Image (cartoon, rainbow, N blue to C red; front, side):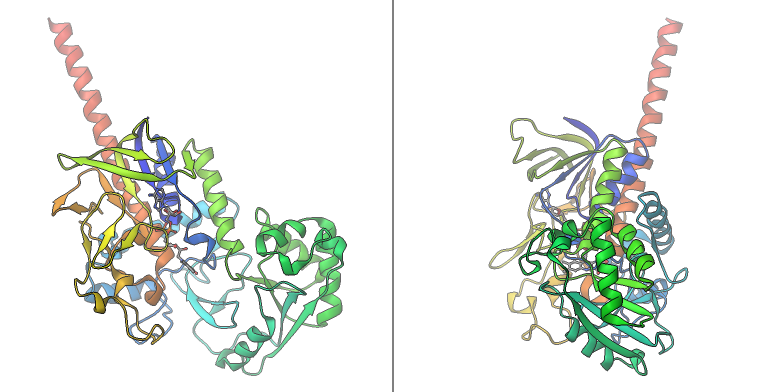
Length: 449
Ligand SMILES: Cc1cc2nc3c(=O)[nH]c(=O)nc-3n(C[C@H](O)[C@H](O)[C@H](O)COP(=O)(O)OP(=O)(O)OC[C@H]3O[C@@H](n4cnc5c(N)ncnc54)[C@H](O)[C@@H]3O)c2cc1C
């Protein structure tokens, strides 16, 4: 099978790149082995959240500029600040098209999101189902906040969240209460919530009847509150709509909190992006795994997959979006780090004891989280020190970033995915123009003869 662009990995980076290529009319395929980081993610998009002194950054773009002075090899350095701006605004437009709108609190400004543990984390774009809080200023503007769980649901601890929120400077003077509501078995499809994860619970609660019962129970349990924090358990496909419905029926401003994985806000984004890719004519090879890529004469010649090993896949442009260690894009052997499909060059420390800090949690990033594929300014990698011309690497398979420490994972995925797609679209246009010119000059020669 022949594609214009073929992407390995269907996480945020792969989907963004696939959608942008398909929008431009390129025949695009995505090979996607399984769930991506989005199933774990809070569902917000972090661009650059933390500064050098671990402070929350108000302006992520300034933060990127400063960071690049020290670390020009960072993936953001390959994309460039103007393109990062463009990529983020393209993503916001896309999010409106897929009816899952993402927005910053103000253009170019980070906001705080509330975590399920009751902490504040800086992020850039949030879905409408989550409350926005400015980073500057120490007041939330709320007087009484209720943290609520559904009795039996084990992946959220409202007491812990309440306790931690009350310790924050931003919540001083705010009354924070917690409550657990018991839903009748009718609303739970006669199932015990203790046996359900967020996705299963959301299926049971995805009806008008269940939402109206939930609204009544909330009103009875909470009394007055100007914000209700609820674990994210409302509808995988329709979350924002169900939340708005609950808000209207109960009269509360409600914000959802992503729980332990599986995280509904991340899965929602993944599902909507996949639908968009499909509608644009993209081919999603879900459940398949790219096993091997043949590189000859500085180019990827073909890709073989586990599910279709009889027929190699061929493409003008290949995009590697296979993620980091967790997704299997990078693998740590006893003494080396390797990229798992092509064996591309990676930046790594040869001294194994230096890969990780002595203490797992000491506030500093482990060196291994910055290991990954090394690329040139067009995001093309090298194998045995030779550039691979038609291969582009995007997202968390890239080295020289510290996404957890920086708070930059989603931004890197979106901006590198978008920038690689733009490069491919440009190259495809040039190839097409050259082909047209060649055909017309051949026709002219034929005519003259
Ligand atoms: C716990 C956790 C919380 C997070 N929270 C946030 C957050 O709050 N905000 C934020 O911005 N980001 C967050 N992230 C990061 C984010 O969700 C993505 O992981 C990140 O953006 C990287 O995306 P990616 O597409 O590069 O890689 P991944 O998300 O890792 O996707 C890679 C995909 O490639 C597939 N793959 C790998 N090898 C192959 C192969 N050989 N063949 C076919 N497919 C293959 C994998 O199955 C996977 O689906 C979080 C991540 C984690 C793990």
